[in-house]
Length: 271
Image (cartoon, rainbow, N blue to C red; front, side, top):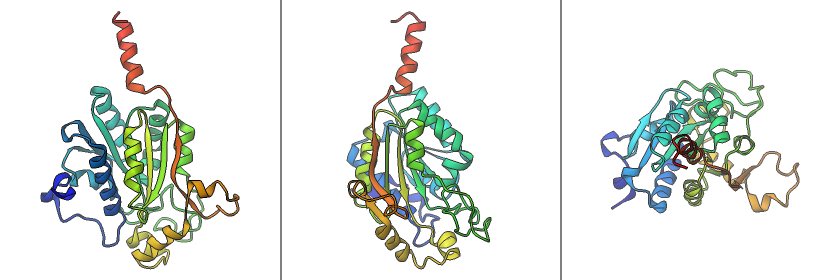
């Protein structure tokens, strides 16, 4: 059986993503990772918020939850707390996760709850007419920054690491063959895992910033990505406009649902 037949809802096709959008490439990496990790359909839940990327949950043939804007992680946390045996995967965008959902994101990292979060980062609010997001680079144009964005953008991987996530990685749509392996490691990590998946939005971000075709945007990812091992030998100046890709952080810390169960057991006198 083809992976698309196994993991996608045929009745939901055709999808709503624009031609050349990177989200389809990232979704393919997610389903390849799920298959490679051997996750059971009935024990896996996909949660998303609002945005182009968050439509992905509706296309996937699992128990899925399409939540309100920025609230994917609270809903996912509730699912994991109710049934810690479930594999909970959150698919979210750069605006959904880091703007209205930013506070939820840092506290999910801090708690180290066993959820895998894949952030589809296309540097823009693609579904709601191209507003700038917390990941829009300085100087780039959007409908809400017609003279150039003056806000500094997050390094989402550094943010996740500093907030307490125990697994952090980054890949790009161009590096689709290696992305599933990073997501598998995130799934297997016992704690909060973040994979930033850098993709392209040719419609709002690409056109407004004159970045060329979707292929040109993919080639930009190729030319600006540096593997973490190679990056260790470069100076900060050499890395100034580069994306460091690969596994960026892997540590261990107490997992939230296990600590919660231990607390309940102690209070009930079962310990």
